[in-house]
Image 1 (cartoon, protein in one colour):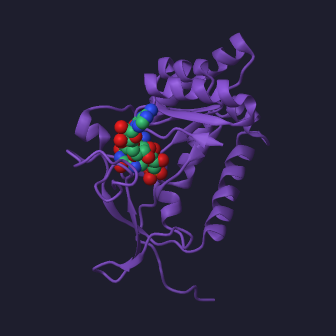
Image 2 (cartoon, protein in one colour):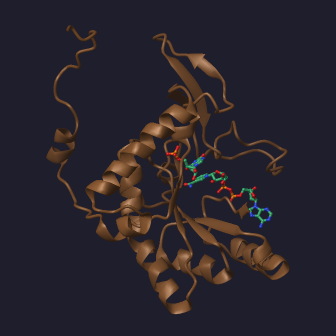
Length: 241
Ligand SMILES: NC(=O)C1=CN([C@@H]2O[C@H](COP(=O)(O)OP(=O)(O)OC[C@H]3O[C@@H](n4cnc5c(N)ncnc54)[C@H](O)[C@@H]3O)[C@@H](O)[C@H]2O)C=CC1
Ligand SMILES: O=c1[nH]c(=O)c2[nH+]cn([C@@H]3O[C@H](COP(=O)(O)O)[C@@H](O)[C@H]3O)c2[nH]1
């Protein structure tokens, strides 16, 4: 399984690489391509022979591509255009090219929303960076809190001669930062999956395919955002019986 991993996948280079792998290796090698944010980009890579296409430019937690270059698109807007393009492509060719929603997941509920938008699977950076299994160092914040280091692949920190070998970096597209440490992957993934399953059941679905059909997406006001979270001070004392 190969994945072409670029901030801008709508490129002649990616098209040629996908075609080359498809011609040379047939179906013995699976190859994904991306990232793209519109139907033209999706169709371009699907027609080249991509087995899946990644969606998302500039929405990641460590992303500054939109600030730096003005390139990118809201994740929901991108999915709302690409998912129908995926379905139309499947209808036309008989080839279903799964779509990965990459970046911007802050709360577990955002995973359900991305899937409700029609994504077939998700790519997560910040989420996994918080766990023991992330190879990044665990450090203490100034307030004593436990943190894990996490940085963008477009940051100076990630850039090195072995990977790029193209001399000095002129500007960064990602930041070098920290995320709150959250323990073991297995414990967290268990809870996350339970929430997604619960959301799916609430929408009357037991499979992802059903969820794509049954989920109802609703625009909300700023006031609703405020009401989505608690509005009292949390009681952190032990429960008194
Ligand atoms: N999803 C997003 O919004 C963003 C993601 N990133 C991440 O940062 C990393 C780097 O992304 P980019 O800076 O966009 O990388 P890029 O697409 O510019 O490619 C990385 C390097 O590979 C070279 N390269 C690309 N195609 C090549 C080809 N066909 N043959 C030979 N060399 C080739 C490029 O010249 C560059 O040095 C990736 O992991 C990407 O996912 C970075 C910025 C934004
Ligand atoms: O603008 C960017 N500059 C970067 O340096 C960078 N590094 C990663 N990525 C992308 O962000 C995704 C992870 O996003 P999350 O941390 O929000 O899950 C990743 O999966 C990538 O798509 C970057 N985007």
